[in-house]
Image 1 (cartoon, rainbow, N blue to C red):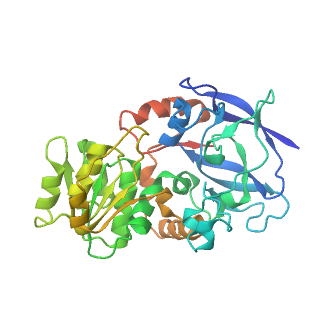
Image 2: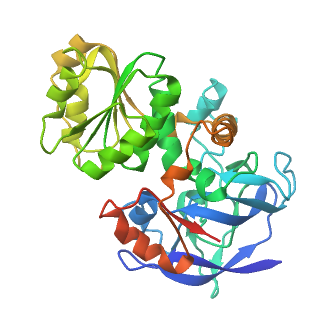
Image 3: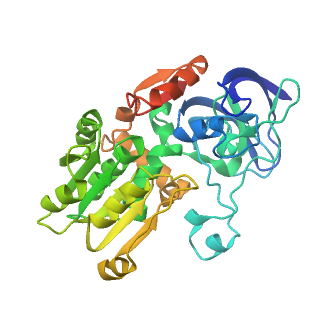
Length: 360
């Protein structure tokens, strides 16, 4: 059986997205059919639309989603019809060298559905990050479904990408501990999630850095104890002044630019940790004095998907949300329909939204 649904597709590079009829097959072995309830509009989807990630158009966009399993194929045991799930793009294989050495959050051979979703004329679609959730239903590998306790899909679905990236940068990659000092450079959705993660971990001082006073005010609501407008003040000097001249134990760079990475490097204390979670473009380069790398010690890390293991992290974070200890609702700026995804992309450039969320 084939399911006919509506979905948002990027037909060609740089062109506005369009709502198309999508044909979704029944799940085969190892696959699951999910009725999508909500999907966040992430910068990664915009990068697909712009051709920055690949040229395999047309793309079925959307990947930051939650919904209900409608059907499963043969050999699927971890999820069943009726399960409420968050979709993830790290469906660990259990066999690659990362999985074998006990680090499945680095899995190098994650699974996607084998069957293809298509346009009505049979044109095969490339689903964003192997998910394609800007659609009423989507077909994924069963391992891309993480069962969690039922919760507001618009909020918890955001753990599928951006919020997990920020929370995980703080909790997993940096492994912030109680009493540490933390600076976060860049206070969009990922940066604010890193701030929320630092607060969850018990950081004593959390310094938010951005060029937009509106974003800094929002960062305070997620747990920032101090703010620095780097358009008006040198952030390295300001961070050191706020830490008795030493710098912070951890700096999380959530912008992905050479100049802000250098600021992060210079703003950490001796033996401090820098975590890059902002995504740079291929041409960007950074030059560091090697003696400073040696002399400062510590660690320079990058964070992939918050170094998360969905089966471990999603249920735990949803439980914190249900307990009122992690305010995921605050990240949902607006809910939209399929017809408003292009407008949501435009709003990303103005800084007026943390997340627009497509709700079905």
